[in-house]
Length: 291
Ligand SMILES: O=C(O)CCC(=O)C(=O)O
Image (cartoon, rainbow, N blue to C red; front, side, top):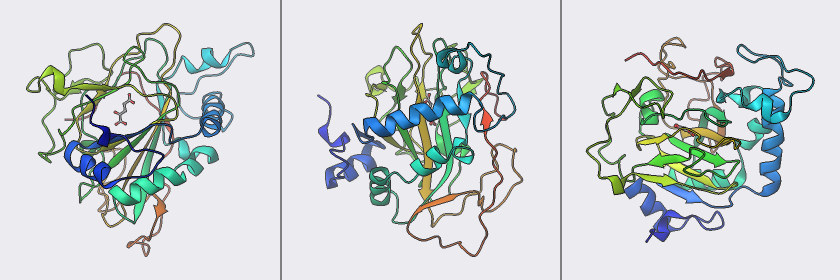
């Protein structure tokens, strides 16, 4: 039976939820985002990929007769959509999400990344990884907030996680990926975990999955022929920690990447200006990260 403490009910975080997050590294809040908010995000997704907020590298021209689905089928995801879309920028501070974050991360929270996945039919998933490998905080406070815009199922490529895998608290070695489920050239070898320890997180539209930056997670290929698996994933951390994040060499090395959005509390580093270094970009279909 599923442990009921993994579910946040009506956005009210209980002490059992907090304990569960510490032990297992994730929480699920079903229906945390209302159908109206989801509709707004859905319309905004189309607007972004139709280039209505402006063109960016990799965005393809749209023919007059192309349906929304035709347009979206060409893409996997866009990184930093909050940089162009006021709707997504606004959504970073969605009240119920902020409430959970201020309870399990810190009263002072900042956001450094958003990603909007459309993941149309046939598109590959993300290999096993820990987000802190990519976005290194100094205090291990990174948290992914995975918002289901469409229902996410095993068939359309939902998130898979290994509960408790954040506990050792170190970054695990990466090995070559030879599975065509994934877009990445490398992965983490999870064969030491038992099959039953590796679980799919199937959720309905409007649900939110919160997961620790050291938690092992992945997603498989979308095996449907017509369904998208649209999800907005925002990453947050405690504002007390600096963020030495160079985006795998894309940004100059820095002791503290200040292209952030404060979403709760106070910023202890407010004497340093907020920057605008990250530009939105489209995720390529094959991902190569330097080892
Ligand atoms: O949604 C997915 O397919 C992968 C998301 C993910 O790996 C992440 O947010 O770190």
